[in-house]
Structure formats: structure tokens, C-alpha cells
Length: 386
Ligand SMILES: NC(=O)NCCC(=O)O
Image 1 (cartoon, rainbow, N blue to C red):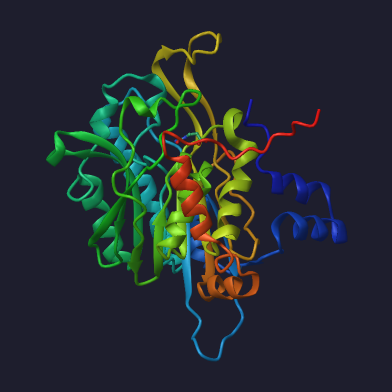
Image 2: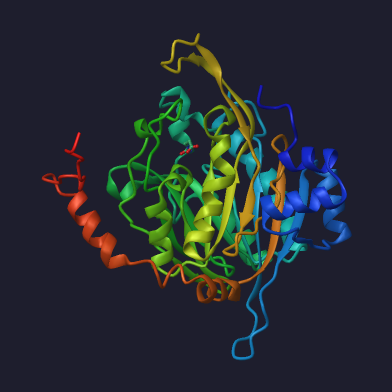
């Protein structure tokens, strides 16, 4: 179940042709984006490493008063490497090695900014509700071994790296957080962003492990654009996406871990809608594969106890403010998706559609302030005529 088709695009490409195929792509994907001509060496590395490599170009109009601001931004989706029964340090090291290989290929493709998947150094073990050994994966955002590991890669490859980890906040009594660390292309930690909304659905028992962010909606000014990170479940909250936009984000990454039975019909819609509504680029990143745990757990839904979470369906993609999007990566295998984009498109779409200009923040500030008040009464007008 959940692992039958490689991708929706694969099915469309195999079943449709000619004008029918291009019309379906125009309607579903905005336009048929030009494929990037990625280096032969990068393609060879991807083939040798058994991961998918895809690249697309989003263009913008040429302006006479501003130079183009073209950057290459990429995402990685990957399976865990060792079984979940292996020692924690070995599991993490094996994932580091795998992802470092994929980051090196990204560097060959001249990627400037890359984001990894949610809690990328570990299996998504929160379904188990067990604390050990999974809490051992937690580490300092500023000074932990994963951050040090990536700082070297970031400066070596001149690449901003966004590293979503399980954070251990030692200064605050070992509190755990779900955190994305933003490492500059010179290898400095610029800052961190924490997950604002914690799922309480299905086997996503994450509220057992960590708290909602206390950091708001930070946006990080990098050499390659202003970056926000909306972690996984936060993508269901339009106001969460909006707040990164209010703070000026041009690129918003959504590192995720989600399974087909729960969320696949929502996946292609949410990050894409956010790109349209907020006039910025979004990057939806999902892990891939099926992870099996040593002890059985139940899902509180009457099904028998089981040892796996279900299939993480990958399908990572990039969406643009003009409603175009890339095809998704595979539902089944590791992948690196590269998008070349001109950040000038954000302003061009704002000027054309006026969605930010017409946002009416003052109207919603008032509605939200009232709705958040314990005395709130919904504004409903009743029909008493019958
Ligand atoms: N990791 C996470 O927040 N998953 C929740 C499920 C979903 O949002 O699809």
C-alpha cells in the first residue's frame, strides 16, 4: 500500500501525449517548466548513488531598474540508511554520509541554498511514544555534532544549508524542540526557527516529545535571499505561512515527514497555495520510505498493533508565486530537486495580482483579536423568518 506508483507525473507522462499532455500540465502545473541542463558528472553521481536528480528553471521578466536575482535552491528527500535497531550514533553517521554525498552533487549543480527534510538525522520515531533511544538524537542547534558537520560542508560548497533537527536546549533544562538551523554559506549559524504547530493526529505523537516554538516567524537574510522555515504540520495553517511573508520571506521551506494514508491529497495543494497567497517561493520536502521500529505500537484506531508508521511518500516539489510548480520527486526513492529561480518574480507577481496590497491586514487584525478573546461571539446573522 502507498508504494505502488512512482509519481502522478509518471502516470500522466506514460498515459497522455501531445497536446493533451501539455494542456493537462498547463492546467495542473501552471506551465511546463524548462528542465535544467545539469552537469553530466552530477547525473553520474546520482545514478551511482541511486537517487533521483531533477532540475527546473523558473524565470521572471527582465527589469531595467533591477538586475535579475537568480539563485539555485534545492531540497533533499531521503530514506533512513540503517535499521532503527542500530546504535544511535551509527544511524546518524550513516544518514550524514548519505546526505553529504547528495549535498556534494547539489554543489556540482551550483546550488546556493539547500534544505533537508524534517528531523533529517533520525528515523521519525515519534509514533512509538517511547523516549529512549530516540531522545538521544536530540542535540544543540548552535553547537551540536550535526551543525558542526554541516558547517564544514556549507563553507566548502559556498552553500546555505537548512538543517531541521531534534533540538536539545541545554540552557533551558534540556527542553526538546523541533528546530531548523540556518547555516550560512560561510559556515556560520545565522539562527534557528522552531516548529510552531505540533500535530495531534494519527501516529504523529510529537507533542509527547517537544513544545510549540517560542521564536515566532523569523526570516533570515542570506546572500541568496530571505528565508523562512515553516516546519511540517505548520503547512496546514495559512496564517503561519502568512507570518513568514509579513516578515519579508522570499523562499519558505517546509521540511516535512508525512504519510500517504493521512495527507497525500493535501500535499500538492498547501505549499503551492502558500506560494500564490504570499507571493514567494515555497519548497515542500517530505521524507521517503517505510521505517520499522523494534516495538509494536497502536494507533488508537482499533487496528492491530504494528511496527511501522506507513509509507512516507516523498513527492517533494517547488512552487512559485505565479502558480507554477515543478513536478514532484519520486514517491519511492531518495532524490535531489534543484530549482533555478529569479527572486524578482516575487515582486512582479505582487504588482500583477496585488494580493499583498489587497491583504486588508487591519480587517483581520481586528477579527483575529476578537476571535482570540475568551468572550468571543461568532458573528452569525440568523434567519428568523421561518
Ligand atoms: N511531521 C508532522 O508534523 N506531520 C504531521 C502530519 C502532516 O502534517 O501531514
